[in-house]
Amino acid sequence: MKNPFVYGEPVSRENFADREEELKRLKIEILSGQNVIIYSPRRFGKSSLAYNALLELEGKVIPIWIDCYGVLTKKELAEKIASQVLQHWRTKNLFESIRRIFKTVIPKIKIGEKIEVEFSIGEEERAFEEALKLPQRLAEHSEKRVVVVFDEFQEIAELGEHVLKKMRSEFQWHRDVTYIFIGSRRGMMEKIFHSAQSPFYNFGRHMVLKKIPKERFKEFLLSKFESSGVKTSPGLIERILDLTECHPYYTQKFCHELWYLGKLKGELTLEEVKETFERMIIENEASYIEIWESLPISQKKILLAIARGEKDIYSADVLTKYELKTAAQVRYAIKALRKKELVHRINGSYEISDPFLKHWLLWRFGRE
Image 1 (cartoon, one colour):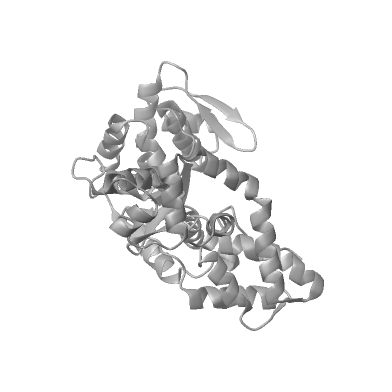
Image 2: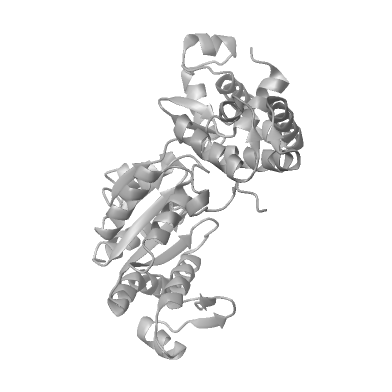
């Protein structure tokens, strides 16, 4: 039997935990042509939310998914957009499609499992400008709404403001295209979409994903274990969620490991939850040590303070306790830790992004 707990990739339908309200809202926004900005800490289920919305709208819209992670040039971005559009352009003849899609550049086409577009070096600017027009051309050709998802969109901001300006100036005329921008670095996403100086200021509605409510997550996990023939002892699901702090990714990952043990025995106990959690921390200790040793002393102090549950990280008590000189030093350390995605801000306070790392810190350095 296949493990019912899936992590590390966008999950669909039966593996998608809760988010009913967000899913309903996103589908409404898509069909109404409203651009949407989705952000939250990494691995909160942003991509899965968009993926499920597109699945449920299958046949009504044409999905274009652009993974921006690792995109280093305008040429690469143009090739990703063009490749996706060409795959959805329905004509009997591929070369006829190319002729109708591309007006100012002639790309190379690689045909394998998927069609890939490659632009020549030296025509990056024209290729980029052409690629930005393609979603609207596809919508007009197909007579269907096109939905373009930019996953990890904050990476595009690294290419420069001139890139964002060109994208905004073109996209604002696309009446038959809905754009969804997904990002995990909240500070960067807010700068792109909240700053009055940014080209993408007020370009869409904002959707901030929070943790899944404990009771709803509990129902989901319990049904997954029970439907796959694994019994759970009283209080076990609550203990899992206490350890993972209801983080979508780490909860699924932890349950993925627990399920194999439960499948062998038919039942899980609280002792097995404890042992499995400790084993997973030990297995990841080398990477945690590497993270810890890469940090300067001020960031180590702040990371440990957050792990220990310090709420007012800028207070005089915290500065004294951890021998930090000024609040400015704390602010600089927090900024660096957020950029490294080691901590995130939620409900007005900071948390360690990886609950397993948090427990390793407490195990290694103590709670006080």
